[in-house]
Image (cartoon, rainbow, N blue to C red; front, side):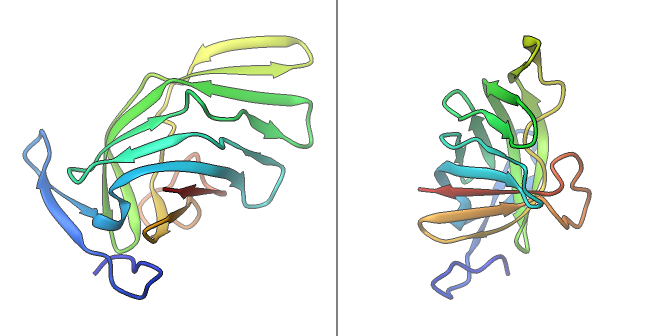
Length: 162
């Protein structure tokens, strides 16, 4: 059984075949288009990304679009980091945890600080495995404590609405 929706009714998962012919499980509660209200470091000091959209299909195909996302703001420094572009990947979900299968990235980011702006491609996918809770209108993804890996987004939590 997967993460429960806030109504108390267990969310369901749908098994689908990806292009690699492997079955992908995706929680039906995740399927749809979500808009980020905030992504923040749990310890504070870094926040942003309001306006980022994430579209998750029943097949697990996910498109993360940062074109309209607010910059990442570092409250203790005079620096912001603006991401643009999209990530496309296949996501699965089991027991309240998402995983990323076959990530692709075409994101760029521009870091603006006291010395001006530097733009460069992002060399790794923006998205990472996360623990999640969702309902028909809200999704919270926590990148702390992920069972199988977690990696570079550890310490962040993202909130989305439909």
